[in-house]
Amino acid sequence: MIRLVYFSTARADVHRGEVDRIVAHAVEKNRALGITGALGFNGRNFCQVLEGPDAAVHDLVTAIEADPRHSGFKILDEKEIAKPHFADWSMQLVDNLDFSPVINLIDD
Ligand SMILES: Cc1cc2nc3c(=O)[nH]c(=O)nc-3n(C[C@H](O)[C@H](O)[C@H](O)COP(=O)(O)O)c2cc1C
Image (cartoon, rainbow, N blue to C red):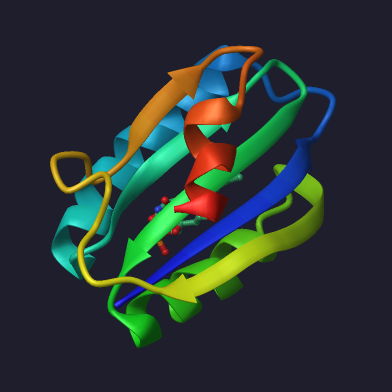
């Protein structure tokens, strides 16, 4: 099992309503894939943590990186983990200027 954290910049016309749609879709799809995590959105940038089986996370990250709703995709951290931090969340939206709930996991 791995945990991956990335940072990106939302396309200028991507606002909260679109992010809600992304999360609603992610909640269903991630649950089916055995992936958990959180998506931080501060109105301009995304910071997402994805946890789950290696291949499932890598395939999903490939799809997310190609999504035209953001750019400047940069992986900040990727590591093996024994158990998921966001076990109860297939995708939790952290709608906050403060990305620390996601970023602090890099030191975990
Ligand atoms: C910032 C961002 C985060 C995303 N996170 C997820 C995610 O956690 N799970 C997911 O399935 N799709 C996520 N997506 C959407 C994917 O890029 C893609 O649209 C989706 O996986 C396509 O699913 P489908 O082929 O089943 O329609 C995200 C998109 C963006 C822009």
